[in-house]
Length: 68
Image (cartoon, rainbow, N blue to C red; front, side, top):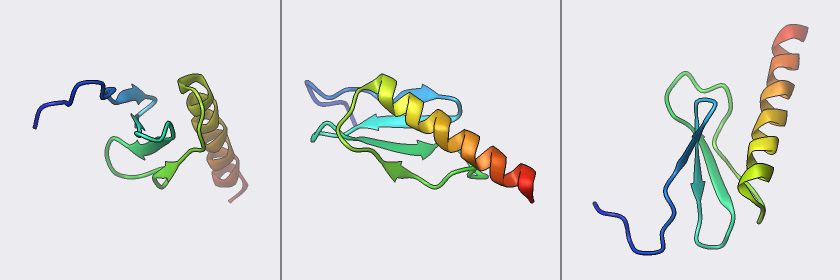
């Protein structure tokens, strides 16, 4: 499958794929298993905001694992 004109490519960040959606939201999903976080969608935001959200979620996951 080729990419369509005007379609943005996925961004790889810290083991996750950040996939821009047509409604200006983002789909964030792990590149491979085991999954540290389940896939999630963001509200309308910039790439920088998506990276910040992912960093925050990863830090929360680390805190939960440390507490266990």
